[in-house]
Length: 84
Image (tube, rainbow, N blue to C red; front, side, top):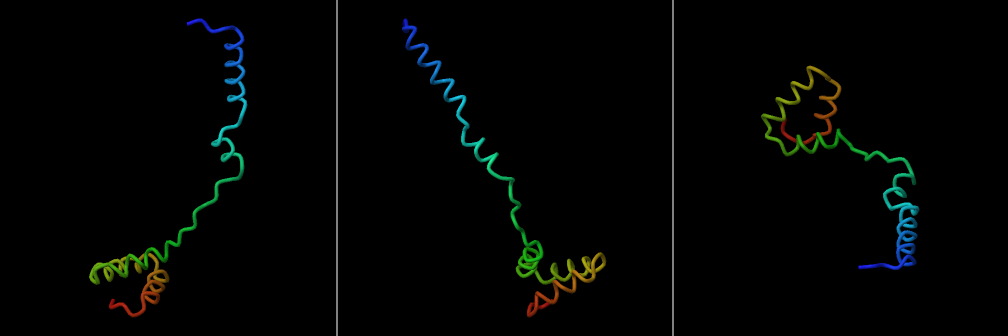
C-alpha cells in the first residue's frame, strides 16, 4: 500500500504533536507535591481492641505497658466501659 508523501507528512506531524503535548500523568505529577494520607493510628488500635477477645486485649495492653505505660493507660482510659 503506497501512501502519498503528503499523508506521511501529516501523520508525522500528528505524531509529533501528540508527543509534544503533556499527557495526563505529566500534568498530575507536576501540579503539586503528593499529600500524605492522615491516619489516626491510636483510633485504629482502639477499634481493634474493642473487637478483640478480652483475654487477648488484656494481654496486649499488659505487654504494651512494659514498653510504654502512658500509651497503655491512654488506651485503657479511652476503651472506657469495655471489660478489661
